[in-house]
Length: 633
Image (tube, rainbow, N blue to C red; front, side):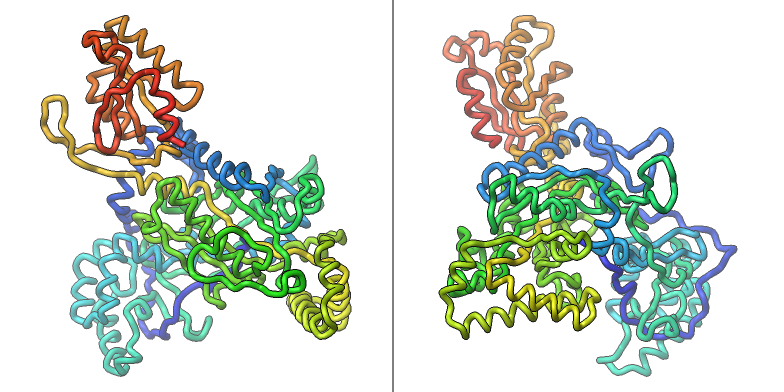
């Protein structure tokens, strides 16, 4: 999705307090991160899920490597997404495009001009801060969190000053409130007394380094989330990574690492349409790397500079074409609308894909209760979008976006048609035949609606009114002949964010007896078997008994062609179980003396252990493969 500059702050009042900047004050230590996240990050490194990139050289911010377990988990998720989106549907084809494409593509898509974030620099610690995220960072920081209750409850001045002179002084020495607690508190008290209850400012509006009313009316810049010093006024920062193609590093050879995977789909739309023998409605899916030069990468892998996306662009007829063909345009009701029908308009298709994506998350172990649907307001929508739903997950550090499902109208194909000079429209024989059967009044109505929609797009994109009217008239005439530019619904998911959500959701601590029967804390990664990095672990009860080892190898080799198997013979069996619980392995198979026939009726059976319940059952080796395949698919 194209990202535009966001309003870099919240409504606030002009303040007459002293500046926060104190150049001689010591820097505050980095705030303590969420305790649950500390445990998760530690587990990820200890068990080989995720490592800091270039760690032996001190790391590089915003880049992460996936270890043995993380690589398997990520591959399982991507493979299942591909199987769900492409292999099990007749109306979706796949694409794998290059990371570097013609730079004009990013001009057409709007990324060159609008793919920016507001950035400020801290006068104190000199860090770069994404201004529109500063308040969020403050509220989760070591010094911001204690103030959250204060500013939500309209804290009295004496309480504010007391905090500033004690705990606040240790946490954030540069903040204006800390440097001048009595003066700021008195100012706060005066503001409260002058305001009615309905107009009372919150401490969030008041709690800034310096008033910036002259910058933008009603706007206030927050203090630095790290040290509390004053931030500079926001300036636009383009998020695309620049590079050069060819031997000369000059402006003529500038290219960009793609900031999203979607544009390649639009550029290759006609080629895929013709070679895949699809017809509208249909989709093109792609998963792959993307790069964004984030100002402040944070929250572990949630906001990174190199990441992967799984995107589908689903192309549909414009509503005017649907109404001409079917006589109606179905509006969506609550819930899943069911199997696709020819009379669906863009709103129903949008609702369909929202529900389909929620079903996908449920199928890999993220219950609907862990997700939220956020419908963007008209003010929040990208200029090309008719509607966007963000699917949010409740991370330990806050509820954040996993996936956006946007109704992007016909903006993308239209833009590439304008910039490339190549037609991106389609011919629809069914529409041409249906149009001929319409009465003149209906033809006029549908033509007028299509003309107005195309004219609105063209004017918004900067075409002169006279030229825009001429082009829109041609488009409306083309609709009557069966020609149109398809609209698109885009479900766009971040792979790395999803992996982090799955890890956070899976992380569980409970009590389980050790080898001596004493209860101890057990860390269990409760991944859904479908996406678990290792599906089954195979254990010989004792590694110094060749007959047990041989049989365990036979069981491993039986399962290995069909699933990821881990063989472990080191240590006590209980300790091996614990290791696999931490790795998220849903099933353990133990080969013991009963397997060898010590109890005749148990010959050629093994113990199958369930990770979550720790229940153990005897299973015939001949039945083991089919039983496990049923559980992991």
